[in-house]
Image (cartoon, rainbow, N blue to C red; front, top):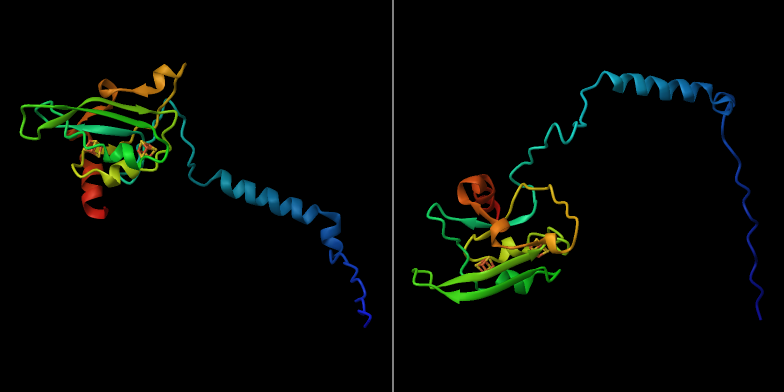
Length: 170
Ligand code: SF4
Ligand code: SF4
């Protein structure tokens, strides 16, 4: 059998010069960078006193769009519930005398499960569920995280910029 010739192991040599070895110039460089940044504009906010106002592209918690008349746009087709990867949406349909014929008797989103992916918004044929700018979600127990229609319905006038954004980019 042919013997495999082993290659000589290369020894790594440190290539620090004298200045790098004493570290002081590097420390001075680091301090200079710190001082330069002290006088630059700050990007941190003093939350919660100062609130972040997200742009229209922001995906906060999903909400249901409520028309001026008080009626929700949702027709309880269940598409959002089917597409939700986190199985966070529960919809129960009922019939209505209105032109749309069906409405969600129960619409619930489990906010602990929601991963803010926006699939529900993408799939909705009625523009009835959209991602809002609300990012303040805190619960003391699991029951509080179940958002029903009382918490989900938001007037269309408050969601105008998201709806416009969707019409432009969806
Ligand atoms: S944003 Fe995603 S995870 Fe949350 S309810 Fe919609 S589809 Fe489900
Ligand atoms: S929110 Fe949209 S996708 Fe979900 S059940 Fe209502 S109409 Fe269908």
